[in-house]
Amino acid sequence: MKLVSMLLVKAGYRVLQADNAIDAIALAQCHQPNLILMDIQLPGMDGLTATRLLKTDQATRHIRIVALTAFAMKGDEEKIMAAGCDGYIAKPIAYKNFLTEVAQYLAAGTSP
Image 1 (cartoon, rainbow, N blue to C red):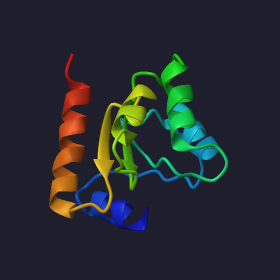
Image 2: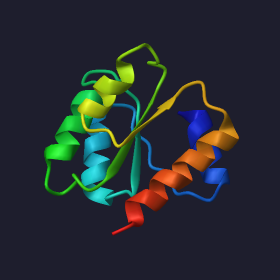
Image 3: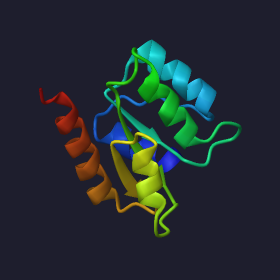
């Protein structure tokens, strides 16, 4: 999370952070971010469950959610997308590609 946050801040993005799914959901409801980078392995509730909750909530369903995870086994991307994620970025990240992907997800979220 530290590396991703540092890269995003240096690129000019405002970053909110949560260490667990419950806090992430509360932040999303309160701040209505343009994009959520969701880790799948979180303490307590996992990121896929949190994604399902956010996507079924009228107040947050419009927020684009991109899984940022080390899960890269066959079938993992399909499970992630089936949970409601709008995209998938595998770790480890290549920082230039990562920033390009984030920009693309944000641009896609602003189109009508």
